[in-house]
Length: 184
Image (tube, rainbow, N blue to C red; front, side, top):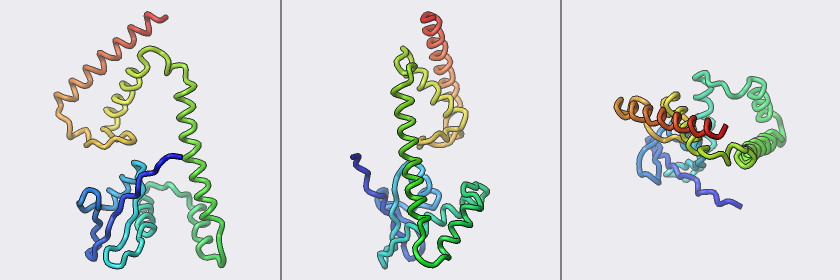
């Protein structure tokens, strides 16, 4: 059984500002969304009353993403959610959704483990170098917006550093190609 880190405690002040208790600074909904994308659980409480506001803010994050055209939830699913709230009695929808997402998370992690463990390329000399180059390439192509990346945008880096990084990647790629040619 793996130890899950404690949820990140966010306190909402009377001014409606959100305060990250770990870093002692104010955060936005976008910051909270980033914490969650990075795999961190959050717990949002009202400072004065102690009320748990987590659900309210998570729904607000989803609503904002949906309103910006980042449609993740199909209309049929949204209709079913509304029906589950409006129907009398207990609904099985929350339990079904929770079980579905748990299966999805478990399935994704098992697929990644199996791909890494069973992939014969992982035993190939230079695989780590090739994997690092692929990550660097994706980072360069997406401006650093790869999952788990916590740095700034592509505009934060100095042009000389970018050129040096590109030259290093080209050199490493040439070395890898030479090694692969020798293997053939």
